[in-house]
Length: 485
Ligand code: ADP
Image (cartoon, rainbow, N blue to C red):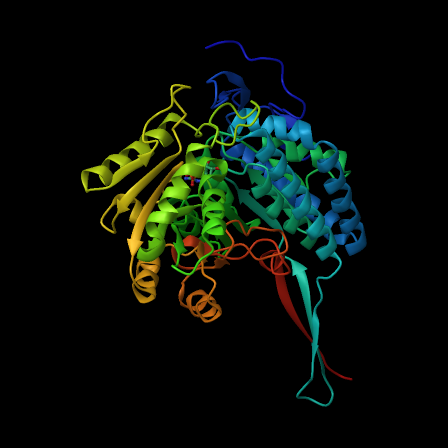
């Protein structure tokens, strides 16, 4: 392996525990790669249970200080944090593209979204209102207050290594909680950068702790340590289920943002150009590596051929390459394993009668690059009807009736996001209500924003992030009955 280059701005190769940047107890490290080039960017600590326990204890100490701050003080610290993120947007985006691969413009977008979440929660911090309730007793009054749950453990994935922490750290700090975060080992630097940013914003030591290393060991400590009152996770459904089981013994609060299998439906009465544009944005953002990406594109028979032609034409124009190169909109996949998964699902589809309209193979650019691909004649018995593709491949399914497509769309254990295009007002309401999903885009292919609740139903998870609901998961409701009035 080649020697690591100079660290980039915000690249920290240590963990942050109680305000100190530290190595793993053993001194062991893990190498981090640039997925576009295979070059080693640097190393991170291979921490485990002992380091995680210390981080949790540091967060518990800091909780005493942070919870005692006024709402205005917490809001002001978060506003400062948002300002610092924006002031350093380019450097943070450069770090993100280097370790994750997404096009630089998308990386800047993600960092901007991180700032937007933090800003939102800065505003929410001042509005965590309670209630008073009309009392059934003449001599008593009833009050409801909201209190921070305490120490929060956050585990995040590699596809949005900056903004997934923004939703969790922002909400937790706004509510008065303190955090121990574990970013994904594939993209740890955008996670560790939150430690630097929190320090720059003057957030007290121990409020934000970040550990990297052995995911299983860190997860075991986070889920079994009774000091941790809440576990918030974004990642795969199997790992989410495991963490939920592990958290049961100490009855932690849980938020889970898990896998999806988003249907994208184009009805005969859709605006064709808008549907094509929406499908491209929904499917190919982050090279198809988002949990809300269109996974199955259902097109009604009357518009099918016209849509397929225009869609394939737009896909052929997507420029593939290193995320730092001009005009690139399709970066590498996170690792070669991800490419192998796309190939497996592609072969399964072609074996069962699917046809390749465009793409369909690895790009000569390197092992992690796969050509943006469209498959026609997709059917419900193909692997991607059930499984998340998480790559730049778009299967087109032809359907006849609204009733039929709603049934197909709902025939999955997932329920995160779905999309459909129609100009019929009645259908817009009818289908929105019939789809068993946490998020519905009608005539819109990208709908995520800090002001709206992000989250799923069924096996896509529990809890909502962002929006006026986003702090709820970090708060306990306390009922106070005041007698002797
Ligand atoms: P994916 O890599 O497909 O996004 P994962 O669920 O494997 O999904 O990863 C999401 C996050 O969960 C990462 O930070 C990863 O390190 C972490 N993770 C994976 N396995 C475990 C585990 N057993 N306990 C705790 N965290 C885990």
